[in-house]
Length: 417
Image (cartoon, rainbow, N blue to C red; front, side):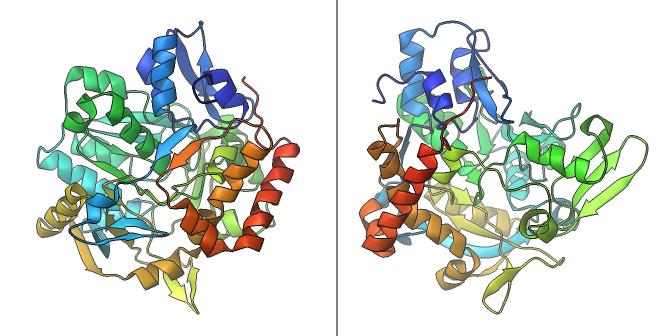
């Protein structure tokens, strides 16, 4: 089935993640990323797609194929954990730059590594995202060529973007660059490396987060309207940052300001929005960045065995998954760019238990697509048999049945415009 899928089918069946790599490969004359009526970032096909570039897109699109990490990358050190994937080293830490630590949504871990790579000349540019300069609730794909530009993208963006839309152009330039993006974007780059030899030479570092899924653009609109503000009145929209976890902050062109706490935005249940993530996120095999060089999830404060979100001095984790990632974390710490302290897998199990459930249910959710005759992605080397065994036969069946029900309700269908 994968050999015949076109972009329209990938999108309409809820498999697109909106990374923008397809636009990068074929150019905006054929495909251009843009927001749909569903509030998602999707490719718009302008002209019939020739078969050769479409075959390349099929080979790299993370909506339809993702191959997990090679166990050999931890053969000499570390562990290939059934849930958490390859771990060579893992520490708790944060940016040593107090201003960056405060302004960043995630205490500056990814930004600090990006800045360090630029400062030491290991890369010529950093690919990441930043709030749009012209439409504050939107998110732009950014190619930063200076440390200050990297710092400007320090805050999280809970909404659609197309971070990989510039990748092919940068490869053509012949420069070396790092990619700071979501786990699915990282997966796309790894797949691209299998069909384009330039990737290994020119993209030496892939750095990511633990991802809870990507909400639609409509979520931001609902948040600002909750304050009695229309989107066109907004001059600044900050999802997180200026503290940890940091408030969701809205400013208007006439000087009004509004803040909502992290718990209020995502956990209160008494607001007119939900975490309306796209279908592909719900069948994701790797929301924890197994294919990255370094994963940087939050290191939550725990009370009574559960994470709490009171404001404080935040921390991230630095999970080095490859030798390159291990060297980068160690060098950045030695240079004083980041500070590190010990952390254990047992603590990871507690702090990110929600990812355990998502991981073990993944095979059942993908199986449901196949059972319903729907286009289904191919996810290899993510220890599917172990996930089913850990979940147990009865819960595995329930997960499949629940996904079948949602598919029959149309949960995996999207408009093309």
